[in-house]
Length: 526
Image (cartoon, rainbow, N blue to C red; front, side, top):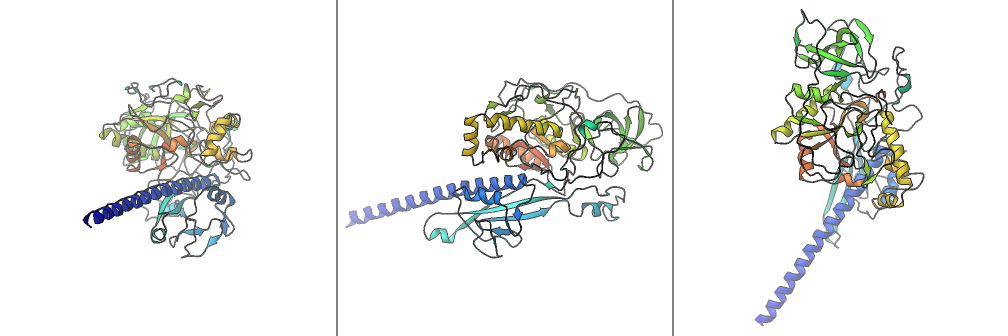
């Protein structure tokens, strides 16, 4: 009798172990499935420029994403989300039939009113006049369960994600007549032309005189143990007698990123610190040197622009990040490979006319970021330094024309390679002739925050990262402990990550700053 009881007990324990193991495996698989579908929906919303609904129902592109997978779990959306079933039909509030829940969060709403109000920190009414383009990001929620009878009716889990900020950048006013770069007129969301949002992984048009240049054949993510060793500060040529200036930024180079849009006073040179007496509108791409900043306001710059000395609002002008990093004592490495030998690849294969090529024909001597965003990247660099790490910057600003031509090259390369087509199709992307460009724009976007100067591609020196830098495929979604450390340096500084590229960071939200414009392409390439 005792032996019989012992065998029964052992058998019961074994059955319990099998059930627990099965439950854990089911939960893991379903979580991974829901996570992948969630990421695909996030990418689809970005590629649709935020237009995720057709009338009251879900856009058919997102419905296709849901129906082409084995994902079938439903749940109840939170009150502030919109719910849709697998067929894309809107479900009522409180219904448990929602296959996906989506919420729009307006990121820039009220910023102009806040900054121009007397209560907005006393900034006065000259700071923001239609300065912020409307922008929203979208939160996505999906559900997953334990696929065990009865138990799955009790437990229902969810996974959430969010898109980048998507801006309503419809065509603005015509460029000023004194801007001489007609070849590169601003191309931000022209009327009638759909934008191709997606995950950023394109190019940086500029090099710093002290950059670390690596061979395009070098696939290692470990960076050379070398620091930028040239001083990018320039000789001061404007008289500062009688001016109360902070000299922290003196000698650092900067550039106007664009003009002809509703930018308030950005891009204008003034004779007075109050920015009331205009001298001229500065040409996009023409580099100038900062002489100093107003005491107590580091966004009010006194500059030498083409021999003219005056004042500018520098908050959204492009400052050379290498030079700016030195002013705060941050140790960084500039490794702008696209100005020597591009390392862009797709599933490890060369991209025609891109990989190994110098992508820029013009002389590019600075690495601009919008100043307000450069300060965030500077904080991230200091966070890394304090933890014993060094940031390696691969990309700051890039011209929109270059982004578009890179996407063309990617589409051409993949379209003519059956292996690459199958790889993307296996990862859940439609590779039909009508959809291939839209699918690939998730990896090289023709319009991105890089075009505005408020995004950065970055790695860690001498650390193994999850994939090669600028790998334009789902392989870039991988993470490891080093990429997690990199992300923490940036998020704690106020930047935002994207799930499709471990190396890409841009503005976080309205509390840390927004980036409102597609700027003109003023440097040549390809």
